[in-house]
Amino acid sequence: MSYKATIRVFVDADLPGEGTLQLGKDQSHYLTNVMRLKVGAALLVFNGMDGEWLAQVSCAEKRAVTLSLTERTKEQTPEPDLWLIFAPIKKARLDFIAQKATELGVSHLQPVYTRRTIVDRVKTERLHANAVEAAEQCERLTVPTTADPEKLETLLRKWPQDRKIMFCDETLSGEAAHTALSKSGVKNEREPWAIIIGPEGGFDDSERTKIREHPNTTVVALGPRVLRADTAAMAAISLWQSALGDW
Image 1 (cartoon, rainbow, N blue to C red):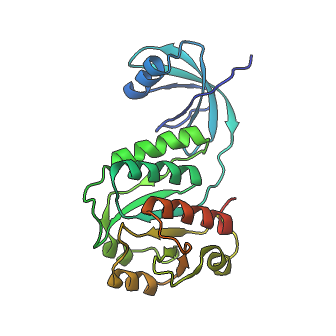
Image 2: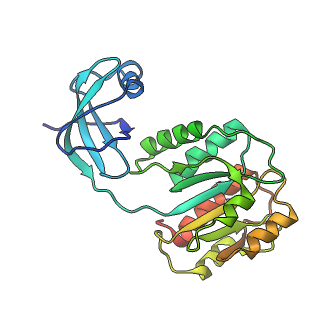
């Protein structure tokens, strides 16, 4: 018997193959009270490690939904190893960054405090929740990891030696982004990269110097127009994906 599934759910648990999986209180509430799923309803589940599975609701209680896994619908496949480093901005636009960066294939979300950062608090749980929702909707098989905010200088001091940096310099001192990235290496979405986006008002001169002087930095320009921080992030991710990622 075949089942049509239109709902995808990320689960933070091992998927036991053709077995059963009991969901927690929050997801059980969502499926029974919000989505109105009944026993026998079909859905898709994934956990970022074991691919995507077709499941049926075998028990539907408000606080404890049990799923029966029936077949794997997608094998787990590699995704780009791309971090997004960004200064916190206002809540709605921060939600937008988490959602759209997930849709575009970012693997890690890292807020940083810079000298011109205006927003001084970030709810990491909210970032993660937005990333989960976006991953469920866009059919990717993983959810980006999220990190607590830290100072830009601290992050640069402990930067992994093998991770390259795409520095989006608002002074337009860099080469056009797609051209610069194409020169920096062969197309390989598994090569570790990070995109660094500045705050509203941009980096100050000392921060810009530290980033430019850091090993493995490619300085790029995102065009002649002044972009909002969230717009710049989406433009940069798209350009990286086109030049070096899985597009």
